[in-house]
Length: 229
Image (cartoon, one colour):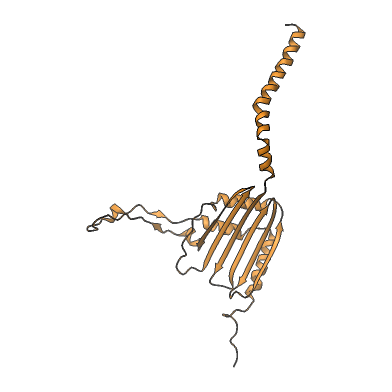
């Protein structure tokens, strides 16, 4: 093979590779480009909120909300005193990737799949956690309610299912009709609550504590001095 033939062989090989690369990679990409462009330009939002109701103490309600709209993130917090007469709040923008990390953490902690829990007897605190996300025209949301997350994180209780016979219960042997106990302990509820309660830069956490401190000093119907006659 002389030099001229070798040169033409190299040119034809490069051309063949270019055509093969176009057919295998560029053509499918160009076909999907409008759809990819639509996804990249679609509006993206997510929202996390937690409402807390307390039956004891100087604060009766607290609300946390972290929301993201196309990369612009802000946080809302409010608290109400014991008799519901005073509410203080703030709503501030947040910078940096930390809010997105929180959303991803809660996703990993199972916030989308948590089940409602019945309110326990003599419960002193109840929670409603809601999460929502949209991308373009698609999205979803979920809310879950529960009480006393510390109980669920530490309980040793178990749940048993009993299959009662269709006919007579005479001489019933529970060891034959009862299933093995299912532990009720579930740390995810407490993990989600603490992640939201402790979220934010120090300036936000200080602002939350400032509101709580101010509400603690407000006399309520239970703590106000009795009128003199």
